Amino acid sequence: MASKSGSALAPPAWDEILALVGREAGERLLLQRLLEAWCAQREVAEAALYADGERGLERAAAVGVAFPEVLAGGRPANALALDVPGGVLVFRPSGPPPPAVEPLLVLLASALRQLRLERQLKRQRFQVNYRGVELEALYEVGLAIASTLNLEELAEVILLRAVSLLDARRGALYLLEKERYVLHGTIGGDAVAALAAFEAQAADAALLPGATHLLTVSITIEGQPRGLLVVADKESRDGVGPFPLADHRTLGLFANQAAIALENARLHRAALEKERLEREMELAAEIQSRLLPKQAPMLEGFAIAGWNRPARQVGGDYYDFLHLADGRLGLTVGDVSGKGVAAALLVSTLHSAVRLLLDRIEVGPALLARLNQHILESSAPNKFITLLLAELDPAAGVLRYVNAGHNPGLLLGRDGSLRTLGPGGLPLGLLPGSTYRSETLSMERGDLLCLYSDGVTECLSPADEEFSIEGLARVLLQTRELPLEEVIEAVDRAATDFSCGQPQGDDQTLVLLRRD
Image (cartoon, rainbow, N blue to C red; front, side):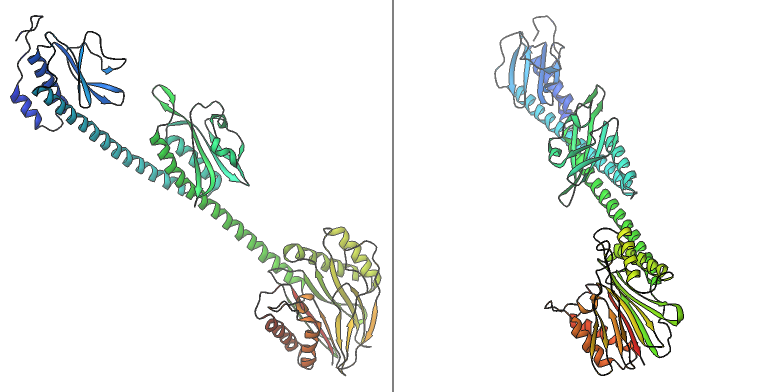
């Protein structure tokens, strides 16, 4: 048939159409040939077949050039339309309207469906390929950020990789510190220095001044928030724009990798800090051990022994043997309030002060008053020291002592009697202007003097009972004639058995002096 315009459309080449049915990736050409066949049959010079697409109804095939690529704002004027599954056929007829259903129209609808399926398959293939590229990129990024354990360097690498991965112009990294997200790095512009934890969910473009489109993901470890990763203004051919949903997923996966890297860096820093503290504690313990006597002095007619065991690496107990003028021997046992490094530092202060002052002042009230003033001036207000300082005249067997709030020493007589060396004043460093008094006692042959810290007598049983002065005296009475090292071992064993193996609660010190 001839059209009104006088031009004739070529009859359909059915052999070509049949060949296209079996050809891979020939859906669009098949649709075009079927539309041309339909136009030839209906004497239509202008027609277009539209299919559902991302932009709406998109042109899939056309005869003539009268219709647009995308059908928007209604159908063209002076045109008819036939709805087909998944699209619409628009044409300008030269004769009466075609029937609603006819064989070629069915073939067109079938070919249109095949084209739509092919498009969906292509999109899925693209998504699969894109996903593969994305995972490969994330893998490479993961290797890059996992290669450093320095927190500052890691923050910079995370930002650079995040911005590059999403083609963003801006970026910022926040880490959670004491209920606040604190800025640890920014790229492409300024960012708010910190924000409260409750503000994280409502973070908007104001977080990065001047940014238009913001994408924020939380950095979490085992469900616990650790930080925020923010990117802004995705680059495109038209300038900057919002981030598509795929970028939300990508940044979320990247944030998971960043979280692991940040946690590793945090644990590494914590391990280094722990190692540093352990080295410092070992050094402090070594320094403190040098303050204690290496061995007990040899003194004719007397046996002497000392022992100390801190509850931690370093402690607040102190003892010393001092060689004084005229062959006299000084003995000191002290206990600084508290434990650990702070107590150990005050022990060092006490050790130096006692030795310096003994060069000018004899053992007695004046010496303790001067020590009290020195401790007040050189220690924290809540720190004090209990101290028992004694001076032995070995020729006369006379012991002169001053007890500044320390545990009462024990003197076990040869006849089984027990005498205590009670306090003669307040602990050092407690009050300014404290006064002290000295006491004197004589030691007979066989008498045993025991100076100790409260870590021994206040050792607790599982029932919270104290080992007590009575428990210490009982062990001393049973072992008083043994070598002093064995006496110390017996006291230690008895206190340990009493506590049933519980951790040592306080520093323990013993000084023994026996007149043989």
